[in-house]
Length: 106
Image (cartoon, rainbow, N blue to C red; front, top):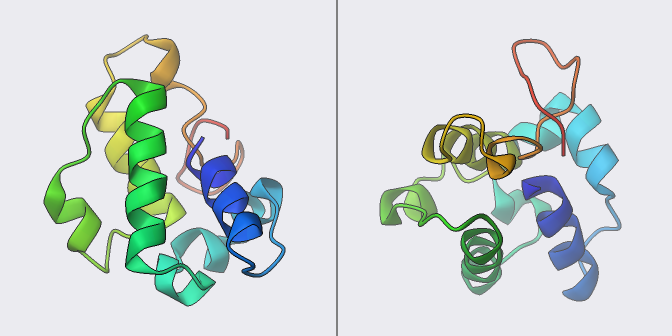
């Protein structure tokens, strides 16, 4: 889900045309800070709000501010830990099946 929301935000903000599949399949894009993808801090907040609303969880403030976590992979991992086990929201958070060391799907 993170990849889909980020791809949608990139499209609506005039950023690079990157699909969710592209964000998931390329390890460098998965790990790239949102700023490196062309998103501003206001864009990150919008992405966070959309994810929180869709998944019914709250992203910790430090996640929004930590450049080391501010990526599709970083937010996906944190959301995976925040969502209750077995909950529908805990699946499909944003890292491609088959990616080394990653589970789930966008």
